[in-house]
Image 1 (spheres, rainbow, N blue to C red):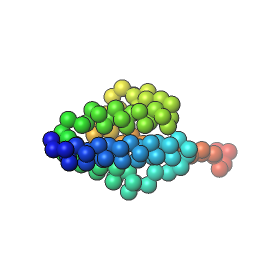
Image 2 (image 1 turned 90 degrees about the vertical axis):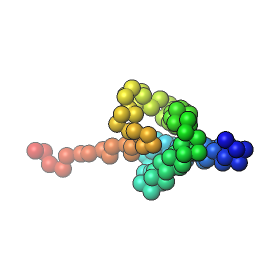
Image 3 (image 1 turned 90 degrees about the horizontal axis):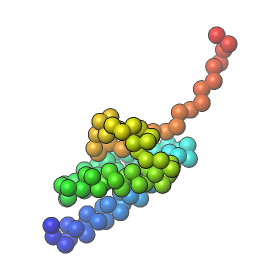
Image 4 (image 1 turned 180 degrees about the horizontal axis):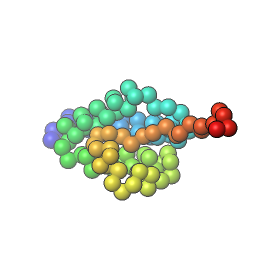
Length: 107
C-alpha cells in the first residue's frame, strides 16, 4: 500500500467514525437518519474495503465503538450476537425508535 493510499484510508476511516457517531447520536435522541445519508455512509464503507481489503473487521469494531458511545451498549447487545447475519457488511444497523402508538378506539 502506498503512503497516499494509507492517508486516504485514514481520512476515510475518520469520516466514517464521524458519520457513525452522528447517526447513532441522532437516532438515540429520537431523530431520523435520512436514507441517503445511510446509503452514502455504507458506500464509504465499501470504498474503504476496496482500498484496504482487510479493513472489514476494523470498520465493524469502530462502528461498534461509535454505537456504544451513543447508546451505551454494544451492537451485539442491541441486535443479538448474530446481528451481522441480518445486517451483512456494509449495512449499518440503525433504526429509529418506535413511535408510541395509542389505540384510537376502545375496541
